[in-house]
Image (cartoon, one colour):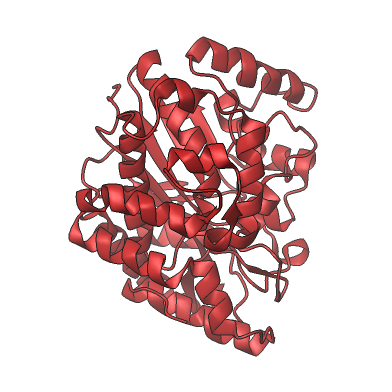
Length: 406
């Protein structure tokens, strides 16, 4: 069934399984799903939420079981599922950890690919790209799926998503620490994302999708080059072009939706769903052409947008944006930081959010992205003991569905 713009939503959250005893990732998602379901399956329906595996054995995804219209109460549903998963993991001395990366994981020695359903696809990916790296096996994100009905709605949605993508890490960055040190990027997940498929660059492009606004043009500009580039590697025709497209927002014409993928997962579902609701309200504002016309939105080249994005993944909300044309969209002067842009957008759409979502967005706008708060809490002490202490508090925030305070 095809839905119209903003009629329904799909939200996906990824979490890692971590052992309490030594804080190492624990690749037992198969045991978790078996315990819940009675037998092993890669997807388990749990009412309005579904659990599933990811590429690696230590990451579980929980997502809306089909499209939903209700964002207001979705965080509580996710929070209930987090608690249930943690209860099931207790016998294994394991719990869920939020945040977009494990700060101490050694992917070269700790990665275990999923060995069950779809394992042939994952094995092929591993042969092509070597998935034993941070950009593959040490990443957790939130995805927002947004429907479009036809080419006219796709044009409007794709235009605005492209324009907003560069500043999303300024709201949602949560991956500042890898290998026991600050990486220099508040959104390290997206830093790796840019190049982790460098062997076949057609798959990721410039992260920001190209200027295409019709289905036929999308196939010609994006899908056909991907299909041609993967052909020498995928001799058994296992991979679908929708699956292979790795831009920061991918267009799923198999289900008439755009999936936004540049959002690091937060410390709890309330923060995730609030960020999703805020982004959706901003997209609605742009689709209504109240700030900038559709034609002007469509003019942006991916290279210009990527330049902004590439800066934002370093400093998140503190990034200074100097592109005057971009700032003019938000009626801002010659230089503004990303926090100011989001505050301006909140001024426009905050009143459309429910009280719970407003509370969480105001907390983030006041206290900074989760990356900023993690770094403040670490106080420049990157000893393993201190990192485990701080990140264990993130685990508590997830279990209790509360915000992380430095």
